[in-house]
Length: 231
Ligand code: CA
Image (cartoon, rainbow, N blue to C red; front, top):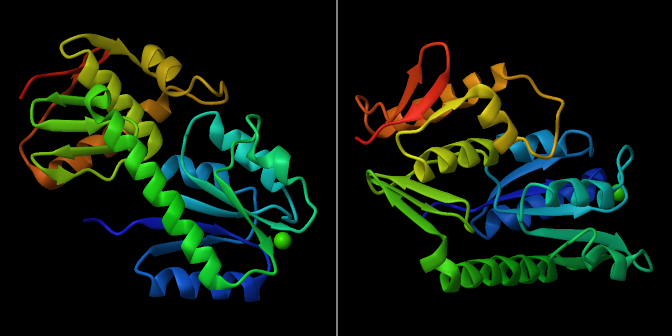
C-alpha cells in the first residue's frame, strides 16, 4: 500500500516541528506549509490524503481555506484551533471540517484523530465502492477515494487530473474540446486558461507512460481537443 500523505498547515514553527515528527514516526509522508495562501494550489496540484489545518494563520483564515477546498474536494480536514474558537461552525455544512483538535494538544491525541478520520473515510468508501468505481481498458477508478490504477499500478494524479481522466473514462471515444474539459474540471473557478488543460493532459500522459511506455489512451484531435481511445 502507498504511504498516506498528510499536509500540515501551521505557522508556529515549534508546533509544526512536533506534528511533522509524529506524523513521520507513524509512517505518513508529510508536507508542511507555514502560510495559508499556498494551500489551495498545493491541494489542487498534489495528492494529499489528509490536512491538519491551523485555524489562525497569518494571511488567510483556516476556515476560508476549508470552505474553498470543500468546493472541489472531500479531502479529510482536521482543524487545529485554540479553545473557544468557532468549533460548531467549522464542523458545520458551510465549512465541512471532519474533526478538530484544541491547542494545547498532545501529539499522541493528534495521531489518534488522524487515524480515526482516515479509517472512517476508507470504510465509507468501501461501502460505496460498487456504485463508485469505473473499470475501463485496464484503468480502475474509485471515485470517492480519488484513486485510480492502470494495469494494477497506482496513478498518482492531482485532483484536476483525476477529474479529467474520469471524464474520459466515462465517455470513451467522444472528442472533448479544451473548453468542455475546462468547464468540467474547473466548475469552481473561471480564473484559468485552456492552456492549463494541455498541461494537465501532458502530465496525465506522462504518469500513464511511467507504467506503460507505449500506451496512448488520450489522443489529440487536431483543431478540436482530446479523446480517450480504448487500448
Ligand atoms: Ca497559528
